[in-house]
Length: 330
Ligand SMILES: [Zn+2]
Image (cartoon, rainbow, N blue to C red; front, side, top):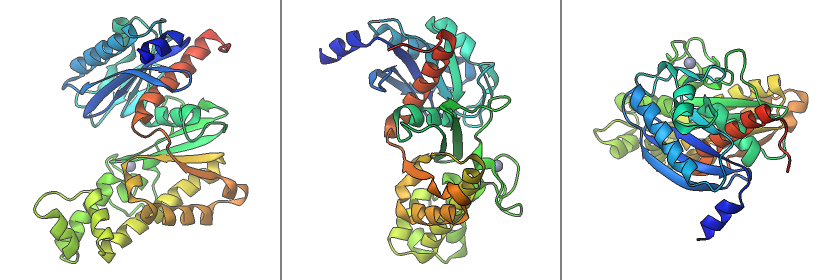
């Protein structure tokens, strides 16, 4: 009953969807970043089924609201042309190539619908609801299976010419380095990411130099978490891989800090589970190359945790709705 009362007392709400490769989540979010009426289901296969599922889930959530939501926001992995409402390419979701997402979802939900790359949405979510509250300029990095990012300048998401800005995972640090998923070599993501760490772990096992890792992994495919577990169990090689990854991450982020001079750099994603083993060398490298005033940049990990995706999508909806309606009055 308490939730019902709260819902009725909410003046401005949006519906938000976090479209992941595995799960699709949706919820009602108010201006304070409170999340209500959550729904979740596995992401179906095929582009059409995904569009339908996003629309249906958002409609269900919208019906739970006492007042009509302002807009719908959807965070999607991949290259998202937000202004055109199109997912240009999403390697994690088969069939997502130049897919019209915003228009058909909008038709189903009956609300203006705005889509955004999930990492860019996460940046706006941190700025509005999370670790970046009260700042003006923010750089966000998502450290997961891949590396994503988003940039907030003067309180607005910086989208670039076609909405692809913030792809910090594809800053090249080592042109002779390992091949990246994007086709280049030695991108930040090819050196330090969930999949890059897993590849290092595989190589360590094949070299026969990491018996601890071999014992943890056995005959299955190693993961970044295995590399960390072996490091914690005393495997020096595994620890060196993670520390070196942290160092490279700091070099990459430090260069971006020198370009953008943000108030804050915020971090989210599964690699944060590696804790100080990754973060200490990252901080040291970042501040060792930070130029002048950039050394005053704050660093923070996400405060949004599991709701980062939903709150990011909600922040996108609030930002776009405010642009259409003019400044929201309290
Ligand atoms: Zn790349």
